[in-house]
Structures are given as structure tokens and as C-alpha cells.
Amino acid sequence: MSNELREKAILVGCQLQNVDDDRFNYSMDELASLTKTANGEVVLITTQKRTKYHPALYIGTGKLEELEAAIAELEPDVVIFNNELTPSQIRNLSARLEKRVIDRTQLILDIFAQRAKTKEGKLQVELAQLQYLMPRLVGQGTELSRLGGGIGTRGPGETKLESDRRHIRKRIDDIKQQLNIVVEHRKRYRERRKKNEMFHISLVGYTNAGKSTLFNRLTKSDVYEQDLLFATLDPTTRKFVLSNGMTTLLTDTVGFIQDLPTALIAAFRSTLEEATEADFILHVVDASHENYKSHEVTVSKLLNDLDVKNIPILTVYNKIDQVHEDFVPSPSEGFIEMSALNEDDLSKLRYRIEFECKQYMEHFEAFVPAYEGKLIHEIKKLTMIESINFNEDAEIYQISGYVFKEHSIYDTVKRYRIYKEQ
Image (cartoon, rainbow, N blue to C red; front, top):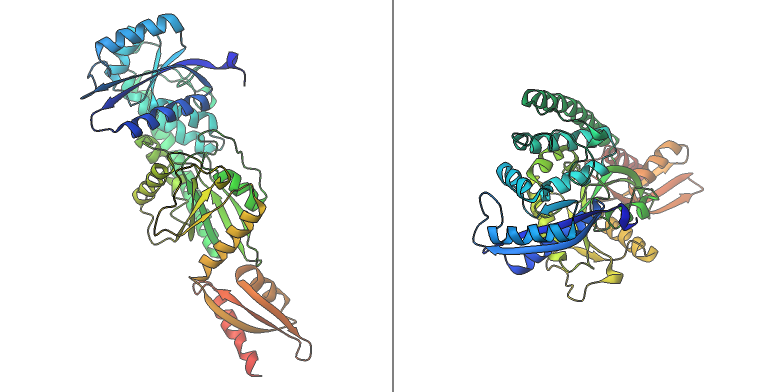
């Protein structure tokens, strides 16, 4: 996309004493990446160290004067602050700078507004935006009374916002009711999936770790993938057939991010809960990123917040072909190093998933008559076959493999062991 179409942005960060340089610098780099994802062009990054944020202006008065001079020279379209601003800070900064002022939360909400494709996604974004903007509407005049054009102002379908609190509260209630219906649909879909008894695998990871690329290569799907933060927003589930023929379900989920706004975690809880319903989790980590360790910690913390417990997790260090020079796998964790673009690595991952699954399965040997064609097909589809041989004299298939004890086919497989004695 050409620079002419991009909005010029100045980024502003304030580093408190309890935040180390590495974390702060990475946070500012990530803000720049978020700005690029929102179709912005960063023309200046300015930072300041303080013991605490200025209660009225976020930054000190001296730094604010520097910022005013930079705005006069560079003429940006928007000024983006790295931390969530209070309503009074936004009000004061907007009045002083005479430019559109947004914060990190608004920027992430804006990207989500662009990415949302499903009805549920759009409703969740609008709910988070309304809840965020509600306390910030007072005294803003017409500036925040509508979602119009430009970074931080977009919304699903360019929805107009009435500044009347009563109308906004009503819209919030309406969205919550609609989302409750969608959540019930999703719950029923999950229950239906469990009845089908397919093994369910979820891909989780930091945004832009390569989850969608991996998902597409494993399922031969066409989920949107691009080198941008939050390229995937709506979860997608496809059938994923392992090397031995067992059919599983694979779900691609929304990427996590450091300091993900609370409003978004709450709004997207039903989406993020896809991970909590899985039988197995693939935690995808970008091994080429210098901050891969903090990405791992962020995702692990969010999974913990979502109460993901007792679900086996395999860490997938992706982009190993571009591995960062300081990369070292985390100790004591099950992991695999690979590139989603390498076919041999994909085969290696399939075999590793099979190996991990077997730890939770029981070995079986069944003797099934040749006329039980439907049952033989079910066994091939729902169990992990090791070998299958046909005895022509007895007209019986001898099948060995692994089966989940919780699966209804487990009892069927046990029943057909009797043929061994005949």
C-alpha cells in the first residue's frame, strides 16, 4: 500500500521507573507495528522517563511543548500514546495539540474493527469500543460522537455514536443480548462437536506468530494470513487428518498480545474460550522474534487467566528457518522446532501430534468381519491405526492401533476382540 494512503502518526511513550528498558523499548516497537497494521506511517517516536504519569497530560509540560513543536513541523494526522489515557488526559491533550489523540487501547480496537468479519466479531468489537468510549464522550463535543474515518475512529459498518449516554447504554444492552444468543450457538456447536467425538486441537500464540500459515498448511485451508498483527480475528475450525488417517478438528484462534485491553478480553471471552475446550493445544511461538520469550510468557499468563488447566500443550517454535541468534527453547517444556513453510517439518509435526495423542490413548487389537464395512471406516477415522491386515480364510480384518477410552468406539473395539479366540 502506498505511503500516500497512510495516515501520518507520532507515537508517544512514557517509561516509569519500574519498567525496564527492554520491556519499554519492545512495547514502543510493538506500538509502531500496530500503527502499521492500522495503515499508519510513523513519522516520529518520542519518549520520556518519569516517576509517574502526569495526571492531566500523561507526559510532562516540557515534553508536551516539544511535542507541539514536532506537530507543527511534521503535521501528523494522529498522535498515538502507548498507554491507556484517562478521559481528562484525552480531553486536555486534544485541546493542547489540536490533533486527533488516541491511545494503545483505541489503536487495538481500531485494528479489531478492520479485521472482524463475522457477526459475532463485529458485535464484540462494537461492544468493546462503546464501553471504552462511554466515559470519554463527555466534554468532547462532536469529536468522539461518531465513528468516522481515520485510525482509532473506525467501527463495524461505520456505526454513528449518539453522545447521549442513555442511547449508548441501550445499544450496549442490545449488543450483549445478541452476543448471549451467539454464545449459546457457539456452546451448542461445541456440544455437537463433542458428540461427534473428534479429537480437538487448538492453535494459540502471540499475534503474528504464524498460526494461520500453519493452520492453512495443515488443513489445506485459505484463512487470511499476512505479516501483520491480528491478521486473524474470528476463530476458524477445519478437519485435520493425521498421517495415520485419524480425523481431528483444528481451530485457529485470535492472537494474543502484551497488555491486551481488559475490555477486549471480556468481549472476546467466548472466542478465546475455544482454547479451553480443546483436547490438545499447540502453542505457536515465533522463534525469529527477539522477544519470543516475553511472547511465551504473555500467552501462558492469558491461558492461565482463561483457566486453561489439565490440557496437554506442545510448544511449536515456528519460523526456525529465520531463527533469532539468541533463541534457546524453554526448558522442561515439550516442544518442536519447525517452519510452517517446510513440508518435511509439517510431517514431523503431524507425527509429533500423533505421539503426544498416544500418551492419552489405549492400545487395541480388534478382529472385524469384512461385512462390517461401516464399522471399519469408523475405526479408521476415529482411532489411530498402526496396522490393518486381511485374513482371507476367515474374511476378517485384524486392526491394531490406539483409541481414546472416553470415546464411544472404545467399547465397540473391545467387543470385536472376541474374534481373536474363534
